[in-house]
Amino acid sequence: MDPSLDTLRDVPARMIEGWNRGDAAAFAADFAHDAELIDFDGTLHKGRDTVIAFQQPAFDTVLKGSRLVHGQVEFARLIGPGCAVVHHRFGMVMAGEEDPPPTRYFLQLFALVWQNDRWEIATLENARRVSLESAMALDAQATT
Image (cartoon, rainbow, N blue to C red; front, side, top):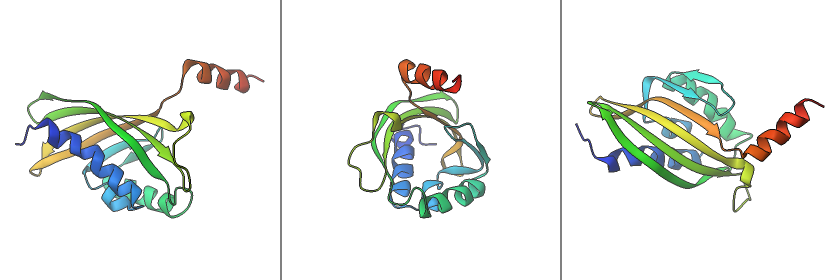
């Protein structure tokens, strides 16, 4: 087993590289066969093949030319033999943008397992970073 924290930190970096190439197979390469991906809106995708089947059409259309930027691993920690967690933050720019607007920053929490001689993503949860003020404004809009 390679317990190196650097090895854990490489997982989000490889996902970003795959996203930035618009390549869903590369984006999902570190997912376990039976992994789960929870989108920022709460949609659950079960299995690496499902993630690829969902992501590639998005890369080819609405996310074409988008890039993930400012990726930063906040922490990577071994939590037991063969188990680890990684917390990652990033922004997303659409084609032609240089910097993401404040509303397009995200947080990710990875649960990883050591199997098949590598770290694989068992579960990845995405969350949109939203300020309390923005959340309250959205709540106010929803009640009008």
